[in-house]
Length: 122
Length: 122
DNA sequence: CAAACCTTGACACAAGTGTGTCAGGGTTCC
DNA sequence: GGAACCCTGACACACTTGTGTCAAGGTTTG
Image (cartoon, rainbow over the protein chains, first blue to last red):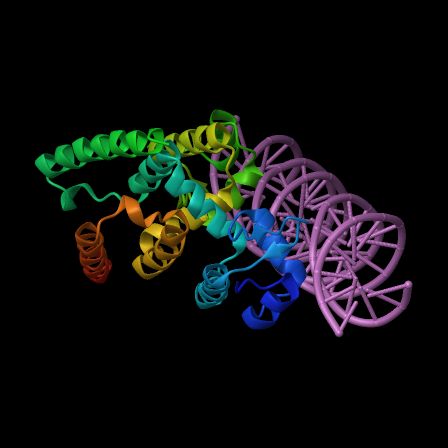
């Protein structure tokens, strides 16, 4: 099979072995393990590691930022709470007629329910 | 008018004056200024500061997390880039028939265009 | 005009992030 | 069976985040 060890994966992705372990602990790329516990990086993981590098460098963000984004998308309550707070900041009432606003609120609640249902279906 | 100085605002919101300046520098609550440069906190800012405290404590997140969430919602390119990366992680192909997938991709591009148009309209 | 505010800037410090290196001990492979 | 890998855990360091405190100087107000 075509799975690389951590040093090999480091070579082809540009990360250091140390950082591959760190990326794993942050929860962003978790490779399979061999019976004896060796990390095994398959083509999918290698690709994710390469795009991860590009993503971080292109936008000057950190692993923790991405971890938070991941949390945002997994936790609809958090997403709506932060969304609501930030939304108020950008709010310019004349931009949004009352009917649109109410429809938006309604949609938001629906989205919240949808998301909750999704995460509930394991 | 009913605008409070930084110490008064600190009293009624539970933040310290030091932290109110920090919150401002992070870009989350930016009070008006008096002609001589004093910060003036109106009812809107006070309310935002209180809900900000609740939000941070309720979800155990930091100011920087919220700042990143703000950046996410202002920058559609960043949003789609992070979204695409994280999406791949949760991906389970059997959950998503090809037709749905293509529709989703199409919607995503439309959303990206919409968002870009929105931010472009100043 | 002096007390009691306000401003910015700096020093300080704990905790978290990102990264290297090294130690002690298991695994693979020629 | 020894070289060359792998594992976890720890020490170390720089930088960021979140806070407090203090200094030097402007503002407001009794």
